[in-house]
Image (tube, rainbow, N blue to C red; front, side):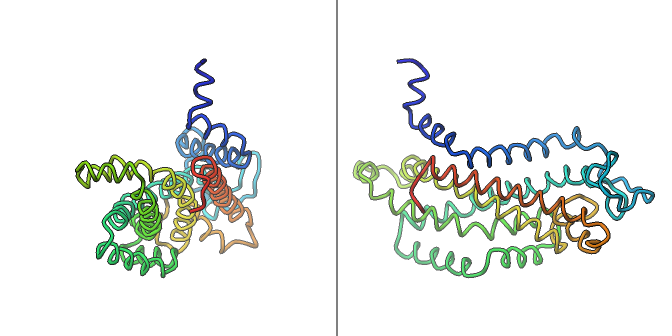
Amino acid sequence: MTAVAHVQKSPLGRQLAKFAKNHAAVAGAVIVGVFVLIAIFAPLIAPYDPFQTNFINVRKPPSAQFWLGTDELGRDIFSRMVYGARASLTAGGISVAIAVIVGVPFGLLAGYFGGWIDSVISRLIDAMLAIPFLILAISLAAFLGASLTNAMIAIGLSAAPIFARLTRGQVLSIKSEEYVEAAQVIGLRHPRIILHYILPNSVPPIIVQATLTIAAAVIAEASLSFLGLGQQPPNPSWGSMLNTAKNFISQAPWMSLWPGTAIFLVVLGFNLLGDGLRDAIDPREY
C-alpha cells in the first residue's frame, strides 16, 4: 500500500479530502489566510507609516498615490487597514483562547462529575448566556477600562459559557462509552480519565466552535473599538476607523467603506471555514 493510499484511507486524510471538496470552506480558508499574512507582514506591506499625519493630504480620495485614500489627519488608509488587521485578528484569536481556557475546564467538571457540581456550573452558565454576548462584553470592558487587552479579556470571558456548555454536552455523551467505563472499572483516577480519554475526544467540536467564535470576537472587538473601549488612538483598528469615519460619511465615504468591507470579509471567512471544519471533522449538529 502506497503512502498516498494510506493517507487517503486514514481518518485525517478523509477529513482533509472532505474539506477540500467543500469549495465554500476552501474559500473561507483562503480569505482567513490572506488576512493572517497581511497582519504578519504588515511592516512590509504598508507603504506609509500608519501614524504619520499630513494635513496637506486630508481626506484625499483613492488614487495611485493613496490606494484607499486618506483619513481626517491625512494618514494613508491602506497602511492603517493593514496594521488594523493585527488588532482584529489578535483580538479574535486571544479572546477565543481565553474563552477556551476558562470555559472548557468548567464544562469537563460539570459533565463528568454531575450532581451538585453540575447544577452550580450549569446555573452559572445559564445566567451568563441569558445576557446577550455583546452587551456582556461591553459591560465587562467598561468595568475593566478602555484598552485592547481589557477588550480581549472581556470578550473571552463573555464567550466562555459557550465553550463550557458545549464541552459539558460532549462529556455527557462520551463518558457513557465503553472505553471510559472500562477505565473507571480498572481504577484509573478521575484526572487521568478526563485528560486521556474524555478531553481528546471532545476537541474536534471545540475546534469548530472556536473557529466560529473568532468571527464573533472580531465583530465584538470592532464594536468595542467603535465605542472607544478597545484599541485606543492613534493605534489603528477597524472599529475605531469606523468611529471616526461616521463623522465624514458624506464628504469622504471611502473612510468607512474599507474597514467595513474588511470586517465583513474576515467574519465571512471564519464562518465559511468553521462550517467546513464542522462538516469535515464532526458532521453532527451540536
